[in-house]
Image (cartoon, rainbow, N blue to C red; front, side, top):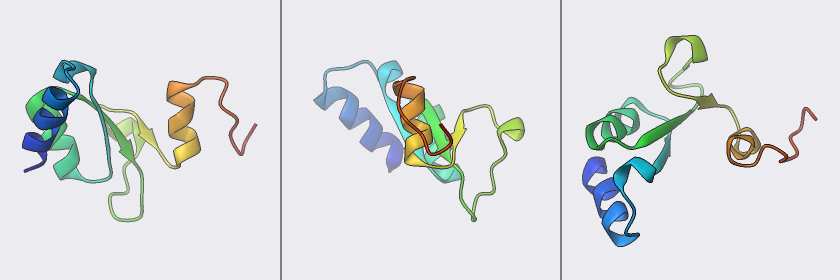
Length: 79
């Protein structure tokens, strides 16, 4: 179960669950993060068709876009 994996990562890394960021592309991923209380960033794809205005979590379309969340100076294709 994904929630159990997130809890195991928290224990293994000796980090509170609220400091974990789960990156996923499905409703099950989002639900697991909500269940344990960690942060979630969604990756938009053809199957989930997530739109930022419809979700309560950040959504990215690419790895470089995700990196911009962590590193504001990270170069992206659009820059």
